[in-house]
View (cartoon, rainbow, N blue to C red):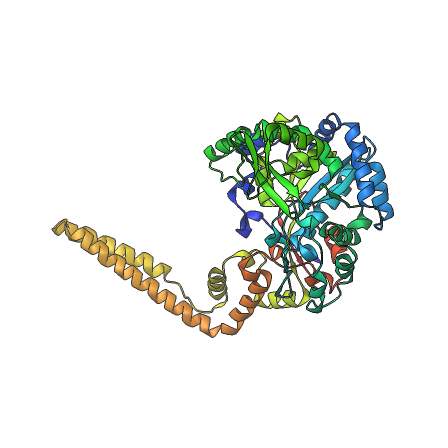
Length: 522
């Protein structure tokens, strides 16, 4: 697999906010503690070591032991689960929704990033252990985000009427999809038929794909883990302390010209029951569960937090705090939107005296299979040029490959000089003639540009076959105009190459923040 790199800025696919972060713009440095450079992890380790209670480790290991009961545990995974008991063990975590069949390709890139980060840190800091973690977004209730995936150009959709936290969804109906999905899918068939709930099914297939690499999967929809989060529940639901903190950060970012990703509510918890995950709002002296008949007095909701913490689910503002309180975590791996919203949360972390993790952008990549590699080579298009829009790409290729001069730059420059001379002469006769001459010059230049466009269109017709090849490559690598990694499923490649994940692991560098082009060339 051949590797080429393109700067993220040259892909035109990332916001200025995110690009400023990876370029370590001074304006953003107050919104995080440490940038993801290998040498910065020692201080992060020391800070987390001094703030993560031993009791939290004991709880974490106990919960994971229960969650993995009945699952195949590789030797590497077993060692990582044992190491988590020790004070010199830390995690690198990524989180993601429970998309069916893993969803978009970038989910795999996230996991590879945390695995490779841990490997790299172990070399740099051999006295410590580093465990890669996948945090399942099992409490998320956005079914529309997880219900489909795209394989070989076709969108496959799981239709269900279930509501509430998706991790609790029954997997019934997913088995019917196998009749329309081509290729080898045994891992997923087993996951969706052996396990009744989506969380367990996802744990199974992620464990089958990555367990031998030591990846730990955690489901935070758990009463024991939530018990450690009670104080945050009280301060947010009763004290409503977080909105001023986030609003203050958002104001500072706005003043710097950055568009923020998330906005804080007065209360940042949902009420969670089977088939229900609904927002909590204070209405007068009552705490109302939105769109339900459920309502609590202050005393009642305090008692519910104490007795049933598992019924309170954090939103995007407080999920990161929850994660960092229950894991000995030193780095979070996320996509562009995730990195941005974590930067909005520094004030919340400071308030709760929780170490703010190093924010690591995940690996970004495009996979070019053998067939597309051959087609791309025939076009002469470079990897960087692939990210330009189609019209620019066509024009640039035609100009580079035509034997004729198709531009009117020299003529336009000469014409501008002629009309400038005419304008000077005309204004010497009558100053009011200046605008008339200027307008005539503009019309003449427009005529030249029109001639250029017509020559370009005619030349494109002469190269129609080649341009169709370029268009086919472009559409294959940017399905529906989006980056391949945000659209296509990893089975597009894994079914043809069982070593696909291993190749990614061997090729991608977690601390290199460029766009990776991986090509099959033989």
